[in-house]
Image 1 (cartoon, rainbow, N blue to C red):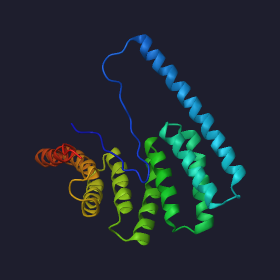
Image 2 (image 1 turned 90 degrees about the horizontal axis):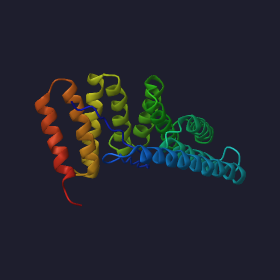
Image 3 (image 1 turned 45 degrees about the horizontal axis):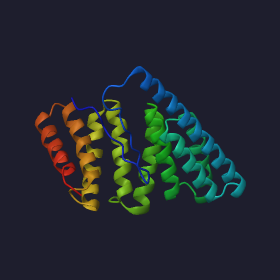
Image 4 (image 1 turned 180 degrees about the vertical axis):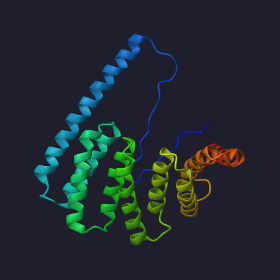
Length: 225
Protein backbone atom coordinates (compact mmCIF):
# COMPACT_ATOMS: atom_id res chain seq x y z
CA UNK A 1 0.00 0.00 0.00
CA UNK A 2 1.20 3.45 -0.86
CA UNK A 3 2.13 5.34 2.28
CA UNK A 4 4.74 7.99 1.46
CA UNK A 5 3.29 11.48 1.17
CA UNK A 6 5.81 14.10 0.17
CA UNK A 7 6.20 17.67 1.35
CA UNK A 8 7.03 20.45 -1.07
CA UNK A 9 9.67 22.94 0.04
CA UNK A 10 9.85 26.63 -0.73
CA UNK A 11 13.31 27.78 -1.83
CA UNK A 12 15.06 24.75 -0.31
CA UNK A 13 15.50 21.31 -1.83
CA UNK A 14 16.57 18.51 0.50
CA UNK A 15 17.84 15.16 -0.75
CA UNK A 16 18.27 11.93 1.18
CA UNK A 17 20.29 8.96 -0.02
CA UNK A 18 19.69 5.49 1.36
CA UNK A 19 22.36 2.89 2.01
CA UNK A 20 22.52 0.60 -1.01
CA UNK A 21 23.04 -3.12 -0.59
CA UNK A 22 24.41 -4.94 2.45
CA UNK A 23 27.18 -3.59 4.61
CA UNK A 24 29.47 -5.12 7.21
CA UNK A 25 29.20 -4.26 10.88
CA UNK A 26 32.54 -2.44 10.65
CA UNK A 27 31.23 -0.37 7.71
CA UNK A 28 28.04 0.43 9.62
CA UNK A 29 29.98 1.56 12.68
CA UNK A 30 32.32 3.66 10.57
CA UNK A 31 29.35 5.21 8.82
CA UNK A 32 27.74 6.11 12.15
CA UNK A 33 30.99 7.66 13.41
CA UNK A 34 31.33 9.63 10.18
CA UNK A 35 27.75 10.83 10.52
CA UNK A 36 28.29 11.98 14.10
CA UNK A 37 31.48 13.78 13.06
CA UNK A 38 29.68 15.42 10.14
CA UNK A 39 26.83 16.62 12.35
CA UNK A 40 29.31 17.94 14.93
CA UNK A 41 31.09 19.92 12.22
CA UNK A 42 27.79 21.26 10.91
CA UNK A 43 26.87 22.44 14.41
CA UNK A 44 30.23 24.16 14.79
CA UNK A 45 29.81 25.91 11.43
CA UNK A 46 26.22 26.92 12.21
CA UNK A 47 27.15 28.27 15.64
CA UNK A 48 29.97 30.31 14.09
CA UNK A 49 27.60 31.62 11.42
CA UNK A 50 25.11 32.60 14.12
CA UNK A 51 27.82 34.38 16.11
CA UNK A 52 28.89 36.33 13.00
CA UNK A 53 25.31 37.14 12.07
CA UNK A 54 24.53 38.58 15.49
CA UNK A 55 27.82 40.49 15.53
CA UNK A 56 27.51 41.98 12.05
CA UNK A 57 23.76 42.61 11.81
CA UNK A 58 21.69 45.24 13.55
CA UNK A 59 19.47 43.96 16.34
CA UNK A 60 16.09 42.84 14.97
CA UNK A 61 17.12 43.60 11.39
CA UNK A 62 15.90 41.90 8.23
CA UNK A 63 19.44 40.64 7.59
CA UNK A 64 19.59 39.02 11.01
CA UNK A 65 16.20 37.37 10.45
CA UNK A 66 17.40 35.99 7.11
CA UNK A 67 20.59 34.63 8.68
CA UNK A 68 18.67 33.09 11.57
CA UNK A 69 16.30 31.44 9.11
CA UNK A 70 19.15 30.05 7.00
CA UNK A 71 21.09 28.72 9.98
CA UNK A 72 17.91 27.13 11.34
CA UNK A 73 17.41 25.57 7.91
CA UNK A 74 20.88 24.03 8.14
CA UNK A 75 20.01 22.50 11.51
CA UNK A 76 16.61 21.36 10.23
CA UNK A 77 18.14 19.63 7.21
CA UNK A 78 20.26 17.54 9.59
CA UNK A 79 17.34 16.66 11.86
CA UNK A 80 18.66 18.91 14.66
CA UNK A 81 15.19 20.14 15.55
CA UNK A 82 15.94 21.36 19.06
CA UNK A 83 18.63 23.66 17.68
CA UNK A 84 16.51 24.81 14.72
CA UNK A 85 13.29 25.72 16.52
CA UNK A 86 14.44 28.75 18.58
CA UNK A 87 16.16 30.23 15.53
CA UNK A 88 13.09 29.81 13.34
CA UNK A 89 11.05 31.41 16.12
CA UNK A 90 13.44 34.36 16.45
CA UNK A 91 13.38 34.93 12.69
CA UNK A 92 9.57 34.88 12.74
CA UNK A 93 9.36 37.31 15.66
CA UNK A 94 11.76 39.76 14.00
CA UNK A 95 9.90 39.65 10.70
CA UNK A 96 6.53 40.18 12.37
CA UNK A 97 7.92 43.17 14.25
CA UNK A 98 9.55 44.67 11.14
CA UNK A 99 6.95 43.95 8.48
CA UNK A 100 3.68 43.20 10.26
CA UNK A 101 1.80 39.93 10.33
CA UNK A 102 0.85 39.75 6.64
CA UNK A 103 4.24 40.03 4.92
CA UNK A 104 5.52 37.23 2.59
CA UNK A 105 8.68 36.84 4.70
CA UNK A 106 6.44 36.14 7.68
CA UNK A 107 4.63 33.50 5.61
CA UNK A 108 7.95 31.86 4.79
CA UNK A 109 8.93 31.75 8.47
CA UNK A 110 5.54 30.29 9.37
CA UNK A 111 5.94 27.63 6.69
CA UNK A 112 9.43 26.68 7.87
CA UNK A 113 8.38 26.41 11.51
CA UNK A 114 5.36 24.33 10.50
CA UNK A 115 7.54 21.89 8.56
CA UNK A 116 9.76 21.54 11.61
CA UNK A 117 6.74 20.65 13.76
CA UNK A 118 5.39 18.31 11.09
CA UNK A 119 8.63 16.33 11.05
CA UNK A 120 8.27 15.82 14.80
CA UNK A 121 4.63 14.75 14.54
CA UNK A 122 3.42 17.96 16.21
CA UNK A 123 0.51 18.31 13.82
CA UNK A 124 -1.67 20.49 16.05
CA UNK A 125 1.15 23.04 16.28
CA UNK A 126 1.92 22.87 12.54
CA UNK A 127 -1.63 23.23 11.19
CA UNK A 128 -2.43 26.81 12.32
CA UNK A 129 0.99 28.00 11.14
CA UNK A 130 0.41 26.59 7.67
CA UNK A 131 -3.10 28.06 7.56
CA UNK A 132 -1.65 31.47 8.39
CA UNK A 133 1.06 31.04 5.77
CA UNK A 134 -1.52 30.03 3.16
CA UNK A 135 -3.70 33.06 3.93
CA UNK A 136 -0.74 35.42 3.51
CA UNK A 137 0.34 33.87 0.20
CA UNK A 138 -3.21 34.10 -1.15
CA UNK A 139 -3.64 37.71 -0.04
CA UNK A 140 -0.24 38.77 -1.39
CA UNK A 141 0.01 36.83 -4.65
CA UNK A 142 -3.53 35.62 -5.39
CA UNK A 143 -5.01 32.10 -5.27
CA UNK A 144 -2.99 30.62 -8.15
CA UNK A 145 0.58 31.32 -7.04
CA UNK A 146 3.05 28.46 -6.70
CA UNK A 147 3.64 29.25 -3.00
CA UNK A 148 -0.11 28.82 -2.44
CA UNK A 149 0.18 25.35 -3.97
CA UNK A 150 3.09 24.55 -1.65
CA UNK A 151 1.09 25.52 1.44
CA UNK A 152 -1.94 23.56 0.24
CA UNK A 153 0.16 20.45 -0.30
CA UNK A 154 1.90 20.79 3.05
CA UNK A 155 -1.45 21.13 4.81
CA UNK A 156 -2.59 17.98 3.00
CA UNK A 157 0.54 16.22 4.30
CA UNK A 158 -0.53 16.92 7.87
CA UNK A 159 -4.06 15.66 7.30
CA UNK A 160 -2.80 12.48 5.61
CA UNK A 161 -0.42 11.82 8.51
CA UNK A 162 -3.46 11.86 10.81
CA UNK A 163 -5.61 9.72 8.52
CA UNK A 164 -7.87 12.65 7.61
CA UNK A 165 -8.08 11.86 3.90
CA UNK A 166 -11.38 13.65 3.31
CA UNK A 167 -9.80 16.91 4.45
CA UNK A 168 -6.58 16.27 2.52
CA UNK A 169 -8.05 15.45 -0.90
CA UNK A 170 -9.43 18.89 -1.95
CA UNK A 171 -6.20 20.54 -0.82
CA UNK A 172 -4.13 18.07 -2.83
CA UNK A 173 -6.30 18.49 -5.94
CA UNK A 174 -6.13 22.27 -5.76
CA UNK A 175 -2.36 22.19 -5.25
CA UNK A 176 -1.98 19.91 -8.27
CA UNK A 177 -4.12 22.19 -10.47
CA UNK A 178 -2.04 25.25 -9.57
CA UNK A 179 1.29 23.53 -10.19
CA UNK A 180 0.07 22.14 -13.53
CA UNK A 181 -1.07 25.62 -14.56
CA UNK A 182 2.15 27.35 -13.50
CA UNK A 183 4.82 24.76 -14.29
CA UNK A 184 3.24 22.61 -17.00
CA UNK A 185 1.80 19.11 -17.11
CA UNK A 186 5.11 17.22 -17.10
CA UNK A 187 7.06 19.10 -14.42
CA UNK A 188 8.66 16.87 -11.73
CA UNK A 189 6.62 18.63 -9.04
CA UNK A 190 3.47 17.51 -10.88
CA UNK A 191 4.72 13.94 -10.51
CA UNK A 192 5.25 14.48 -6.78
CA UNK A 193 1.72 15.81 -6.33
CA UNK A 194 0.26 12.97 -8.39
CA UNK A 195 2.07 10.48 -6.14
CA UNK A 196 0.61 12.27 -3.13
CA UNK A 197 -2.88 12.10 -4.59
CA UNK A 198 -2.41 8.38 -5.30
CA UNK A 199 -1.71 7.88 -1.57
CA UNK A 200 -5.08 9.44 -0.75
CA UNK A 201 -6.91 7.37 -3.36
CA UNK A 202 -5.23 4.19 -2.12
CA UNK A 203 -6.18 4.81 1.51
CA UNK A 204 -9.79 5.58 0.57
CA UNK A 205 -10.32 2.38 -1.41
CA UNK A 206 -10.07 3.81 -4.92
CA UNK A 207 -7.47 1.44 -6.35
CA UNK A 208 -8.15 2.16 -10.02
CA UNK A 209 -7.83 5.91 -9.45
CA UNK A 210 -4.65 5.35 -7.44
CA UNK A 211 -3.12 3.15 -10.14
CA UNK A 212 -3.98 5.58 -12.95
CA UNK A 213 -2.65 8.56 -11.00
CA UNK A 214 0.55 6.78 -10.09
CA UNK A 215 1.06 5.64 -13.70
CA UNK A 216 0.87 9.24 -14.85
CA UNK A 217 3.49 10.18 -12.24
CA UNK A 218 5.76 7.35 -13.43
CA UNK A 219 5.37 8.50 -17.04
CA UNK A 220 6.41 12.04 -16.08
CA UNK A 221 9.45 10.83 -14.16
CA UNK A 222 10.53 8.64 -17.11
CA UNK A 223 10.90 11.67 -19.39
CA UNK A 224 14.55 12.45 -20.13
CA UNK A 225 15.36 16.08 -19.37
